[in-house]
Length: 116
Image (tube, rainbow, N blue to C red; front, top):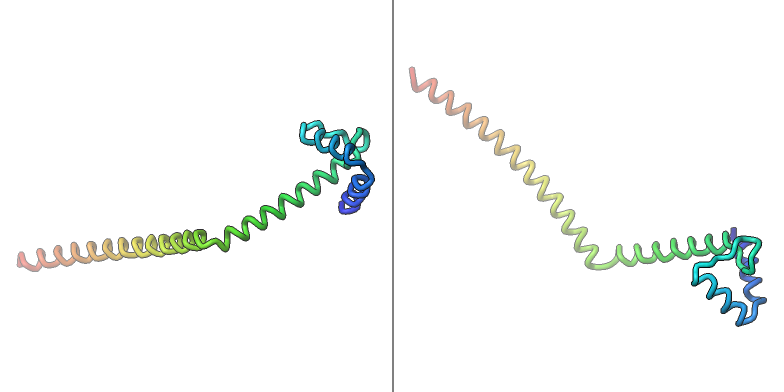
């Protein structure tokens, strides 16, 4: 948890610039040393945890920024308007169907009374 991150931070502070550079290059090259046993002063689990925390913070910040963006607000407005219009169209289609049924019924009634 946070203790492992603190331990890793303390180990990094004790490293020379050359050691840090070598460490970073090894990580960049994708050769992560095994936890607890390699040349690395980093605890792999602590680094993974830290990276996950940083990713979550960045994602939350980006989502917050996007949510407040005027374009996103406009898109939401358009989606709401689309939904409202779809509902209005469905309602109108239902009303037209009911009116057709009523008209046909009236026409049949008119035809049957006209025959007599």
